[in-house]
Length: 137
Image (tube, rainbow, N blue to C red; front, side, top):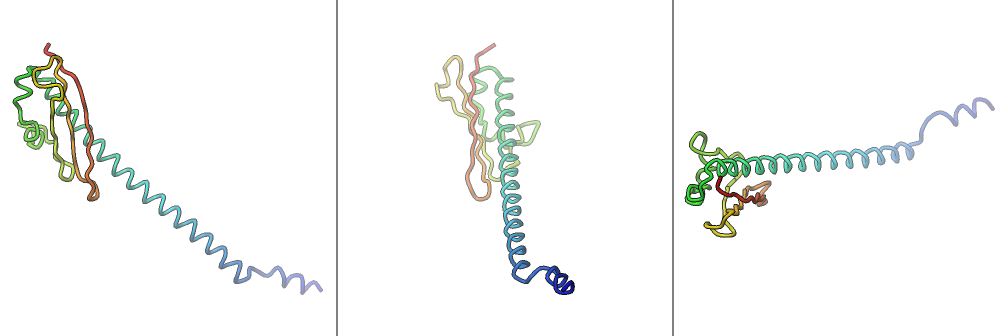
């Protein structure tokens, strides 16, 4: 009788092992999918941070010039693409371009400045904008 009881406690059946393996595989697939999703979000956040920094770089150069004619006559797309010291060096993202527009007109005071940074991320067009007002000191 004791031998019969010990035999019942001997181990797991094949069905129990298959169910446990299936649960483990499903959990691992979920964890890997979450990891890949976090990795993609991290890349997107990194690219967005670089784009915002590039827009701020252009905004700082505009603020340093401070004279509307010096600001509105500049080709900011070319300036941003050139390496320092003659430019901003804003070209580290894929297909990055910087555009500056003046929504309220070039003679407005204060001058409204819209800086748009566009780039390609995983074959998808992305952009961010920075808008500011500037008046002569």
